[in-house]
Image (cartoon, rainbow over all chains, first blue to last red; front, side, top):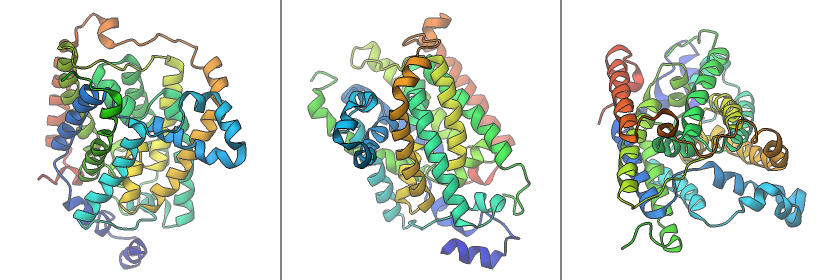
Length: 197
Length: 190
């Protein structure tokens, strides 16, 4: 809604970094301090929980719920992957829930909750179509989770927790993921966006 | 008290830990589509600043915990074909979706409806992987499987040496970012 108003006002010709990001950007903390904070969280993860911070394992276990109506509980239980990673209230699942709750808390405290259908960087390149953006987000979600599981982790499990342990797998993931993302961004955003940021 | 404490007791600590993680992701600006996508376009370096700092600060602390017997490593196996293919897909997905799994979850809470749509996509991706798991294990994860290898093992450079190197790289990269690439994403300081 706010986005549409914004588009009408600016008529696609003025700056794109305007109002959509404004209040959220003001609520931001120094990124280096945030990095230090996440680093300290990982000390607690390793030292007390004996479990590195990670998101995608719990998410893929949670996906078994979606397969229940089609495969039935027997089918899910017999799947080799879910048998190895069953859905349960383990540390990973609690961390996943906490991440959502923490972000919600932060958004409410800073009064930055804002419904967003199409972000500005996207609309500058592909226009304001909600269907187009939702389609890309859905497809991206499918691909990212399949990739995360094949690689054995995501930005947190591999990118941060694995890299800080100097794991070969995690540094390979980190560098390959960045290279692939850069190439993808080059292709997706090859047209100069009309309102350039 | 012995660390790590009993798993059952410590487990619940994951909830407040996750809450702080969610707050940090939001306040760090990385629960924002524009910030993440513009990292891959070299227009905003917030993601790199947060991640690289977290790796160095986290790594030095965990190394000290490990050396003093208060923690153990959890190394993911270097199944190189699976890691490279998976990471390649991950990079494509991250730019299309505009979030990674953790920041996508955080972004849903900020009101991003497309993050929610992509979250449903991630659940579907999880189902697809579970269905293809047996095949992927047999044909991809078995290729170039080097085991739970760490960089110090294969290079002979000790752990502390790696952190000196990483800190030096971070110092140069951060200096370049702050001086040469002044972007809107760099302007907000606390």
